[in-house]
Image (cartoon, rainbow, N blue to C red):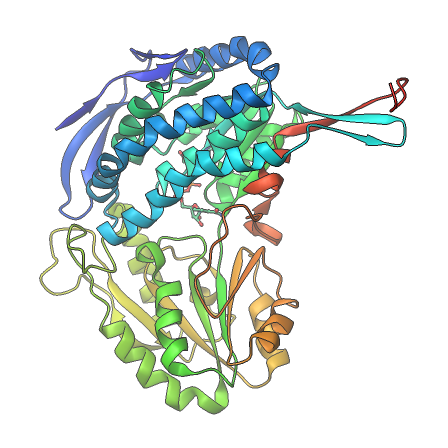
Length: 476
Ligand code: NAD
């Protein structure tokens, strides 16, 4: 049983003022594996005050000093990869294969920030005006449970690179992962208050960060509903925000696609992170003329997906993070059936032999139309929809007919043709013929998938405010 009863504030592990105990559950077994004491508003204020005290010195650090801090964070984190992977599998239920990938991104975060910083000029001239990029201030970092370490490290790396200080509020369901991470990052020996970590509830700690006048910016990853609440709460203090929100991403399979490539790709994109991924390709758009050929192939591929013990290296889909999430996904499967879609594979209930944990049958529906609930709302579980289209123009129209716009996938025998389709898709990132990733390219959503961009130079500049200084000539 893990007991987590400290918060990380002002460079030290401290007793929380809050006293609420929250159970940590292994979703593969449903067993309680730990307890975390949640911080309250007072703890949040204490962390904000520490970050505020650390800000003047931090904001004046040179590029070389920030690179040194990022190197130390990277060096402190890297040896803990195995411990972080183990915590991710036990507490979140990520299959080892997925945990390794998720935390692999985390491991790159500080190195990526160093690369960006090395090439970045904080001062530039526009005629005789000098434009200086200045750190925004104290950043509130609020993260979800589905890739806790990756989101925290990615956001913290850019805050430090910009010369900001931070108060981090991870998901309360990620407290074991947070503890392993906090102990690792503490070893980097950053100035006290440079970053602080407060476990707690969103409506307590997150809400205080979102409204507090000493927080200059919120960097949030989570649901669209909470993102909107943060935007509203931050309006009175005109907070800067970066919001990485939900998705309902289309996988557009063009009529020339090789199904031997397209089917496994669509399954992998759809079931990424056990379906608990904002970027999951959950609407699979297939040409009507090739539907009869496609359906048996995708049915077989979904039935072959290995769901089960996340510690098994062969497992592709693990449990849902919580019983609440399990029930939510079951509810959507029911809505799919009641809404008139055809259940091709999977369905309600737990897979055979997996009655103990929060496991869902990998599920796929055919005969889905884009107006059905399962095609419109983010399910956040392994539930996919096949939607038929007649023409390429109709495929693009269906792909864009969503409130979201985080990611899209295009599969075609002709990459140039896919590129032409990509140019018409309203999505922050379009992947052609593969599950590609470039950590220095901007990441974020169109429409209700978010506001602003993370990663690379875009992510750095989202933590900076341009200041124009006039009256000194460029030659001086
Ligand atoms: P969530 O929105 O419920 O919670 C995210 C975080 O916000 C948690 O730390 C939570 O405690 C906090 N929070 C809750 N209420 C709050 C409030 N009123 N004020 C401030 N903070 C509050 O999301 P979740 O269930 O943890 O994660 C799943 C969601 O995250 C999905 O919608 C998914 O699409 C989204 N997500 C988006 C991305 C992206 O990059 N776009 C990545 C991963 C997950």
